[in-house]
Length: 302
Image (cartoon, rainbow, N blue to C red; front, side, top):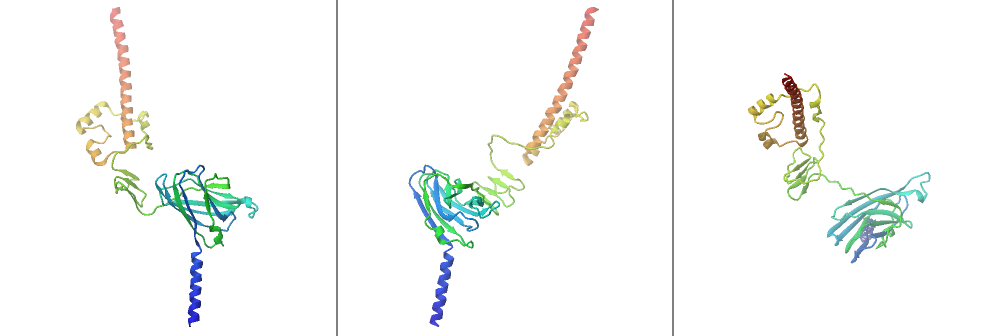
């Protein structure tokens, strides 16, 4: 009975070691200077196709920018071309990086002397980080995750690829200053109730440019079939309603606000109508002046 228990204990212990062996602490790094080239992380992961699908986690603190470091890197090495076993055809397939910290450096993967390198293309003062890895199911060897080093050297590797950041969020993202990015994709700044608006701001906005798309631009005013309101009709509407026809009243604006694109179109419509009235008035004035000059000339001859 005791032998049986001992055997079970040994098997269980071996299983634990096997499970733990898939998680590796690969590097602890610190520097009290500013790198000249960046930080090159030399791994012992072979640049060979179909042999690894690691998750590499870099955590620490970047004193130079006062930002926490939290990076997750994944990649797979595959081959393209007529000869899939030719190392010249190997490449990093679908590399990915996400950040769960405040530090988002430019990160490259490359092949250097048959080993994978991770290159942080940043020059930051006083940096500390640790690297841990997870790998399982591709025949990875523990020695690949040992003996990693970090040096201040340029990236002279081949097959270099820039890893693009990609982060996704589900549900609601609450932002400081009473803001929210809700599950419908609507953003509220200064408010947690953006309603049906893609962007709702409770406060002032300062910007250099705003582009508003409007499909109903009022060039139709210049069409010959357009019924130009007379000035008498406009005068009657103003006296009865207290605002221009087709333009919301002050009370309506107070309750509902205005749609910028729609209001610009309405204002342009009024400008175009006013322009047509001025053109007609000028035509009448020119004709009247001609008649006046004719009468003056006739009066002098008589």
